[in-house]
Amino acid sequence: MKTVTSISRGALAVALASLSTVAAHAQAVEVAAQASAPGDDIIVTGTRATGITAAESAAPIKVLDADLMSHVGQPNLNQVLTQLVPSFTAQAFGGDTANLTLSARLRGLSPNHALVLINGKRRHGTSNLAVLGGPYQGAATADLDLISPSSIKRIEVLEDGAAAQYGSDAIAGVINIILKDDKEGGDGYITAGENYDTGGRTYAGTLHLATRLGDAGFINVTGFYRYHDFTQVGGLDRRVTDINGNLLTSTSSPSITAVQQSLYPGMAGFLTSTRSAAMRSRG
Image (cartoon, rainbow, N blue to C red; front, top):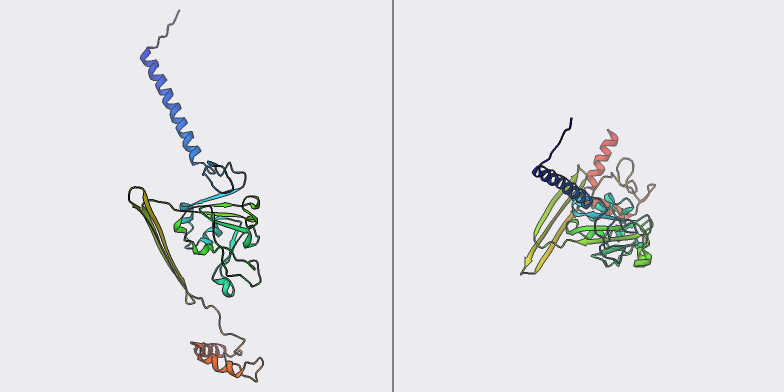
C-alpha cells in the first residue's frame, strides 16, 4: 500500500514564518540578556581607548550607578563608598583640624596614593594636613565628603595600581566621579535622626534640578546641606572630679590648679551632673 503525504504551499509558508518568528524572538532575548549583563558598562577610567566596557578592561573596574548608590541610604559619599567598595575605607571623624577634611584610602595604602577624578579631571586636594598619628597621618587629599551623592551619575573605581597611567598619586587606585548631565528633571530627599538621650542630632537634605536653556543648552544644579550635632555619651571627667563627683582641689591627689577650679563650675550642666553622680554613688 502506498501512502502519499501532501503539504499545501500555504501551510508550508505558515510553518516557515512561525519558525523565523521564534528565531527572531530568541535572538532578541539573547541581545537583551547581553545588554543587561554585568560588566557591559562603557568606562573611561584606566584606558585611553573609547568604547571599552568594564568586562574588557585590563584593570579591575567597579562601576557604581546612581540607582545602586541610592539604595545605600547614606547622605554622604564616604559612607556610600565604604559600603559598596570593599577596598575603600574612610575616616568617620578626624582629630584636631583633620576633622574638617575627612580622608579616605584604597587597599590600605596612604590616602595620598588614591587619585580622585571629577569627570576625568583631577580633583584639587586640601591644604589641611592631617598631622596626628594613625593610618591617615600626612593626608592632604580631596575631601569626598563635600560631594553630594545626588549629583553623581556613576562612579568608576579602579581597584589596582595605576601609577603608569596617572602618576604616583594613583598607586592605590583611582576614583573617577562622573556627575549628572540630565537636561531636565530633578529629585531630592531629606533625612533626620538623633541618638536616644545622648545628642547626635542630624539633618541632611539635597535637591537636584535640571532644566533646558534655549534649544541646545541646559543647566544642572545640586544643592546639599547637612548638620551634625555633637554626641555626649560619657559621664564625669575623672581627671577633674573624685569618685563622689566633687571637684578636685589643689591639695588633692590628683589635683587641679586654682584657675581650673574657677573655670569648671561655670560650665553649663557641670554642677548638675556632679550632683547627680554623687547621688547615684551614695544611693
